[in-house]
Structures are given as structure tokens and as C-alpha cells.
Image (tube, rainbow, N blue to C red; front, side):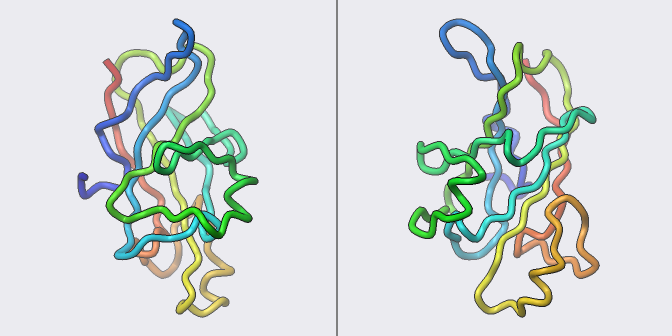
Length: 146
């Protein structure tokens, strides 16, 4: 995996039944240990300024798809630090060939962090306390679809 949270490998359009129905990207967990899906706080994805809400995003962990609603109560599925997640978005026609600017933030709860710190975290904006190892960082990357 790359050091960047948003991985360059895996950024592409999704084709179903011969039609391009959306796009996907891979992200890694910037944490030294894995987390359970119920700990995740997904944010909003921006691609070239177009906004995709967390409810529109499908997370694929170990080959299984999860919606935001499903993840909120899933305390059994574990996202390992060594395996990237695939983020899928429905978008008719997908993305055009060329470079695209991606902005995506997410954070997660941690049992040993004070609740007052975790309650103020917003996955869509930078925290006053920079803690990228806890996923509290808005990630930006420019990637190419060919």
C-alpha cells in the first residue's frame, strides 16, 4: 500500500452489464490497528467539486459491501490495517478520462480517546488537533482515470 490514505491503485470506473454505472477508489486505514465498522464515521466525498454524501457511498471490506446504515451497527466486521477498503459510488457514466481531484475524510472512535475529543470530530473538516493516525484528517489526492 501507498503512504497516502487515498490509494492510486484501484481508482477506476465500475462497469456492470456492459454499462459504466459509477466509480471506485481504494483507501487505507491510517491507524496502527484495525477497527470495527461501527467505529467508522464516514464523511462526504468530493470529486472535482461534485458532492457525494455518506449515504450514497458503499464501503467494500474484504469483498463485502456495506452501506453507512449497515456500518453504524456492525460491531463484528473488522477492517484490518493491512487491507484497503474499496469506496464505491453510483454515478451514471462514471467519471471521464483524465485527472480528478478527490477530497475525502473519515474518522473513527477509539476506546482510549476521551469522548469529549471524539464528539467534536467532523470527518468533513480538519480537526483543531491534527491526529492523522486516528483517521481525523481530510484526505486530498489528484488521480487519473484512463
